[in-house]
Amino acid sequence: MLRMAILSVVAAAVLLAPDLARAESAQDLAWCKGNGSPTLERQIGGCTVLIDAKSGEARSRALNYFRRAGAYLRQQDYDRAISDFGDGLALDAGNAAGYYGRAIAYEAKKDSERAIADYDAAIALDPRNVRALSNRAALYADMRAYERALEDNNRVIELRPDQASGYVARGLTYARRGDFEYALRDFDKAVALDAKSAIALFNRGRVHFSKGEIGRAIADYCAAIDIGPKHASAFESRGFAYLSQGQIDRAIADYDTAVELDGKRATALYGRGTAKLKKGDASGADDIAAAKKIKPDIASVFDQSGVK
Image (cartoon, rainbow, N blue to C red):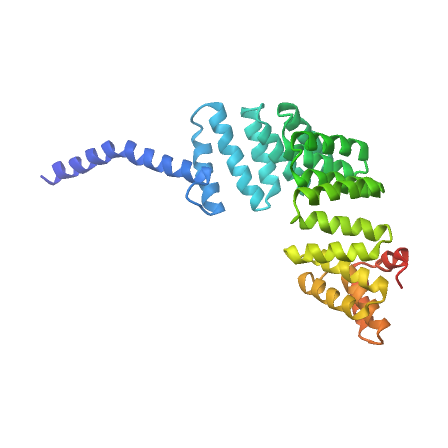
């Protein structure tokens, strides 16, 4: 009787095994897809089970690699992300999102050449891929290949003429090239499309400052700060503008906030130190020393600006 009971249990387990396997597979797939808000570790685990099973069509298997790569990206594990994107693309070479994702990983690793090559591939497969065009434009601008950057900026605006972000990006390219009037035109357009675009207001303020229009710069910085969120760069820039006007107390207040938001910001520390010394506060020397420890050539930034 005992033997018969054991055999019955074993038989039941065998019959249930396919259903259990299907249930586990369904759960792994849900986690791999990110359904149910799994942790990154659980998402990676679910994708790994599916990848190791090596079942399904090539495109489905590629998606498992891409999803795991995306989780690795969010973990900032860029080498594993690149590897998974590569394995996924080996199964589905026509997947623009795969090239785009790998480009982001390469960009995070400061490998601009490989990032651009993958953005090229993504755009070739999907010419209307605004994110890939925008990211490639930014990389070209970093490389001072401004004409190429502007080509991509223009294409983004053609595709999304009512989006402020495209004009902000092109305005930044113009500003970096020193074409301040064109930059202002684009930032004005961005603000017209989105009056709450803090990034457009902030960068328009920077252009006004570069042109010596300090009052306009401060007005734009104030508007950007009021909109938020709080960024050290906005308070630092306004502080620098106040310092250039001799408004020492306001400059120190803004530098204080910038340093609270980013204690390793050398330019804010140096600016605050300069403002304190102008006020006769000897502790300014400590700020300047701290700034030079972070960035030894920090004084050149202020020397070039004319603010002493």
